[in-house]
Length: 302
Image (cartoon, rainbow, N blue to C red; front, side):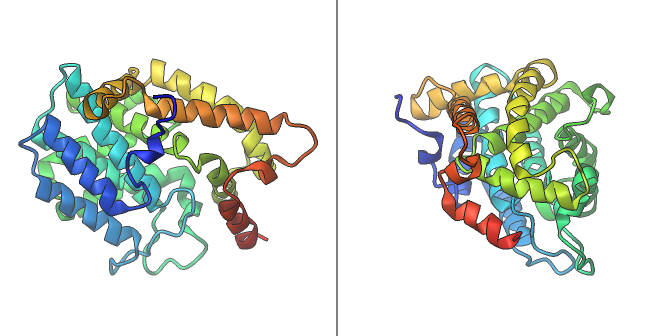
């Protein structure tokens, strides 16, 4: 069991593989949820991010990219499944709302077709509000009913790291639960990604374009990320109702693995980050394992 890694269960670089796994898992906990509707919403999202929508430019942010969206989507499916294993139930429409919210939670980074200045990273500070607005405008294309807009927007609202969740106008307790699960899935999908440490370099340049000056450079962001692990652990427990606890129930039921592989991946990343930051005089960026991504960053922002 010690050698089982999260990234080896599903080919996460393939949107189709992610979707197939998601449909398989949804059938296990919500047989009445319409798989064709989920497939349609997923396919619409892929086409959106690939620039196939007339009035929206394709995704041009390297950290908040299509893979992050599909990672978050699958993490959300897994949390739904794990919650179901503990006796918590959701209606088929609530499942659909939550999965569409996962697919659209970062659409605020996408630019309109007439917006050719910079990249969508410039919207970082208010991308959550823009994502909510996108859902409100395009809900029907993703299989949502007009009566479901408010709940789905509230779910996306929860992904704002600066948001006081007590101020979110949830229409009911189940929407609040799903919103906290989505916020959890968003964080887990980022931090458990096997390329997370390398992609932090891209994240710095997104924040820099947005003129969020919390970091001197990408190396400073790496150093401050040590504290981010602590902040997110506290957020899980005190703000998100420990929704991450559902993951282990998913892995036990789906894969017969009695381990939360997301947390294991995060712990491994955290340990490696600490090691390269305290490894002496070498530049920690040169010790990142996936040199292809590091070189891509250097080439793009040279």
